[in-house]
Length: 283
Ligand SMILES: C[S@@+](CC[C@H](N)C(=O)[O-])C[C@H]1O[C@@H](n2cnc3c(N)ncnc32)[C@H](O)[C@@H]1O
Image (cartoon, rainbow, N blue to C red; front, top):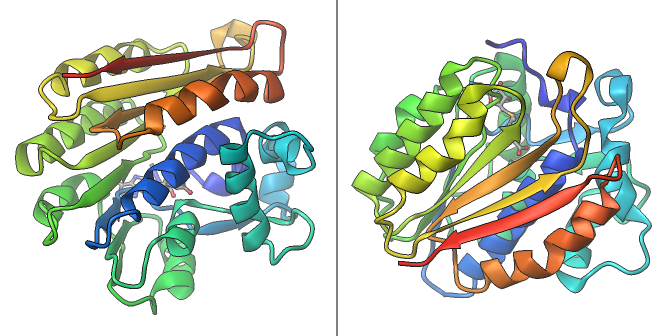
């Protein structure tokens, strides 16, 4: 299980979709003064070099953040996202890409608690060195799926849970669904973000419908944003795209995605059939 290293994929099309949605959600949560807690069940290392051998092996970032970095006509919400990546690079060239904890560090207020779970010892050590000194922050080398229940509900009754497992084990699909159910049972009003891969596996194809059933009674419903950017690879393998399933989406998120997804599908396309889709359920 611990073979997965996110550095191989940092800044690719899937990270762009995931982190664009995360930024949009965190910006909206910070509009109210009351603190909110962010729980990142699978945090990774926090940030990644794009010049190291891992990132350069397949240079996946070139088909993701690389396509947006020098684009001169980005929609404003996407320009805001790219500006945060620029900030992470100290205003210089694109050499590093922020992980979800780094986006959190840039967007949470000092009083917003941050709980980060990461099982890989090396990733955990890098993450702890990066963010361990932040106030109201826990960086735990523990199973984020197993730990989630005891973190809920957060003390302020405002919170966001990001569920972003590697899905290298097929059991991650059932565990992601279980984690969403736990969130709804213990903290029904919480915002939950789940990243989903588009791959030719029955578990991956069934998960969106299962999440929709689980979230049918969520007070503010759900939305599901998908991007398909690549053709099916040889022998039916490969990541053709990804999606974000959001339970209790903050007001305005749907419209922001409706405006940006068509642009992203074109900008990140690796073949002529690139598409996007946006579904929502409003109770
Ligand atoms: C897709 S990466 C996370 C990327 C990160 N959320 C981001 O957006 O920058 C998944 C991470 O989960 C870690 N991991 C795998 N299983 C885990 C578990 N059960 N609990 C916590 N971390 C886990 C892996 O070591 C890996 O670093």
